[in-house]
Length: 166
Length: 260
Image (cartoon, rainbow over all chains, first blue to last red; front, top):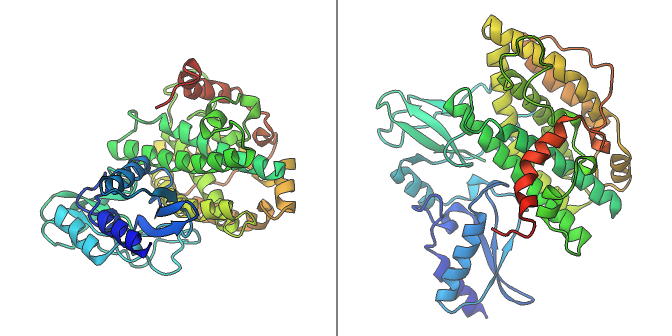
């Protein structure tokens, strides 16, 4: 059975995220586990955001990718522990950067914006993925998908997406 | 079991109703970025509502589904705070300029996000582990919503005379509805008793702290919360919820067995 778990991992290795196709589900940290359940093979996925509209598509993609290799598996959605961008692999971050999306910073341990009074003393700079300048500004907390914010480079003038640390 | 279901429905209805309200800005935002922001916040809220409705459907069993809970219950069966169903404006009189006032939207989102940031954090320790998992997930989202609405509260409150006056008017209009937070409904009391829910009195001081600090920075005056205490969470709603539900439910009810 270990063989089929390995085969499933191998089949899913390069399966891309439907929204950001340059990065794989595994690199994003959405693909959590392949395990042997009571009814056979189970693939565990976790949503990035509660309302992420891509979850249904991801489930279908996982199933059809495995079926194409002759592997039958059930897809299980697991909420806890909640997904964090810290699970994103370094390779995944590099791919995002190359694609023009600024990859997320590490989430600061114990970060809690609830009890903040003033703004945090140090605002992380988000380097522009195109020209590398740190001279950038957030133009909107929210971007084209739930997981991104919108930034603008003040040097090369390009707007770009920033994958929010989460 | 019934205590759990009632409590979950209260949390779910809060998220769904505010999600639907905020989504009314879609295509009408004051600037493009805020149009997108409100749609994103709605997406998170509706996502949270779905997780909670799915949990309720599992607990109820039978032919209950998340869609049945969202689309085939009437106003009297909804358990959301009245605050969340109110339209995006205060009382309209005289020459009402607009039925969409962004100050009202921001103030409401701020007051609710400040509450949920504390409540979801406390619910991470709920005796119901499924609810605890949803809480941990939602907490991350609501913290970001709080940051967004707080930033805009400062910008509007400490902005022009017009934006200051409108956000203060929105605050004066909405603040009395927050009294509903602090009076436990029978469903909440039962859930607290069972270790599933959280007594909001335990987070009130923190909520006051978040609100007071933000209002001071935004140069807004905290109104006195007094008068009528709304009871939306017991199913006694304002007239506005019916219209909101009609908008939201009509398609599903026109095609009751529709699937997509």
